[in-house]
Image 1 (spheres, rainbow, N blue to C red):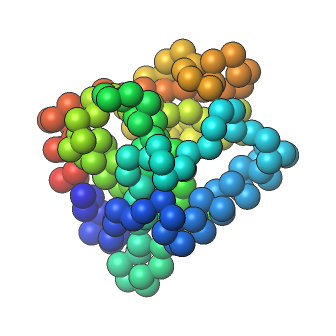
Image 2: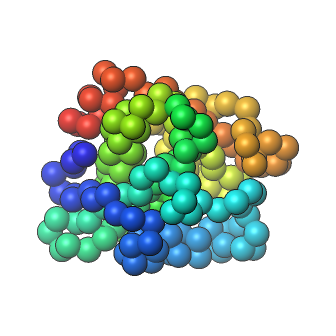
Length: 167
């Protein structure tokens, strides 16, 4: 699962306090960006529907710097949920490392397609997915009919998952 020599990426439970703190920080940032706490259509992710949740720690300081999870949509498809990195670490490869670890974990679990969504107030998120090999797809699930919602998907195969896990 290790993808970045400066990071220690660990799988944790959804209830893990560090993961919960990072998710709260993400939601506070999104609340500010969208101007409302009501910006997520559908049911928020939970421990009951997330197949995996990861926390990335800086090896030098030991501080948590980001997180991300996979919510199962069906037996072969998962949605990336709560992919977040602390603002001061952005642009340093933390998000890409978490994504690579999520892709490797998806492959291990037999997931062959991952999806993601980014809203109108998340141009950085949209750019991230587009630059990470995701294709724009029609809105899915709770995002169907949601204006200013942008959805993406990427196929996971054994070659790409193995390559990203070693990168």
